[in-house]
Length: 380
Ligand SMILES: [Zn+2]
Image (cartoon, rainbow, N blue to C red; front, side, top):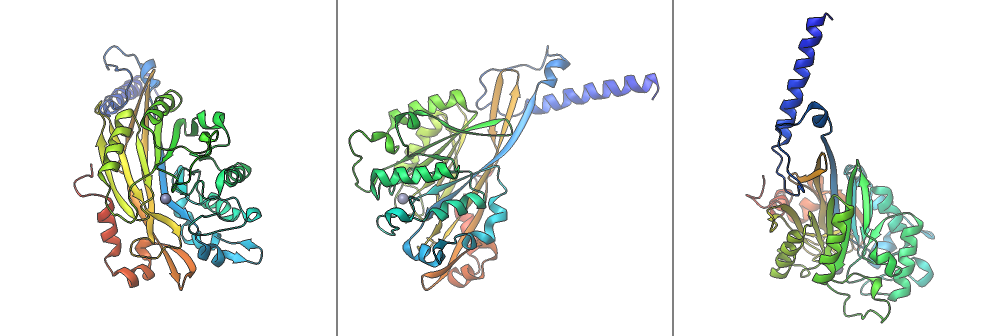
């Protein structure tokens, strides 16, 4: 290359850098702590701009009825792998996948049980971890089904297999620690709360065992999470069972979370899917709420209770000097179906290719569910 060409190339690169930086500045500064202007910045500063991307996803209830674990039984082992096998490549796609572990996984030593006071085999936790789940929320109305000791055994098992969890705790220190996962230089704080515990009182002195919805406590934790993470994810157990649309209470609480600075809300408990919606926080920032992820794997086969799915959101982190801006892309939804016959042969399928779902709900079920989740006019 001659000298002229080198000089030409140099100016071309500089021009490209400026173009890219102007493009970047169009990102909405939704959570920007500082504003910068393009003018006056030199090439050295431009080089410090970094845009990181990760995908954050969630699935609904892992709710293991006795008919489901009886179906999984192979001798003295419980094989849940085969129930999820059709989905495992899809579940591995997102960088971080959250699931609601509705039933405790204290295992056989204290006796397995189904509805109404659940305790599931250890193997279900092994299976979801192997399938691609990176973290579970354990704050739900079944957390104390078998008491505090059983909940602790369940936490011990999750710790033993190194599956991160949030919402139930071994002690106060454990509860005070913000759970943060990191991927591609993006730190994500996971918070989890439940509306209640099916009337089971929390024993005095063991209040740390499970996070119960309390605005002051939640606001406090969200503010603490902001200091240690870029993105805040709230897993919340709320709403009315079997209702396909959110209650006013859910809507009000969702707005509260977004106003406080939560980026993404993953709801569960209704056992059926409820829509996804964008909300605007009091400072103009955009947040996403998935009101209910429905059941993921359960023994419920009543209408819509065997349809669930995975919501995935791309999170962009733009770092410019000391200023960090987080923006969220339009979410995608991948619906799933639990096929079963006579309360056995539980196998999960992608809804889009499930003949069993078409037999049960008709040919347009996939489209109906997609329309239900991604509210028209919400897409951006
Ligand atoms: Zn529940």
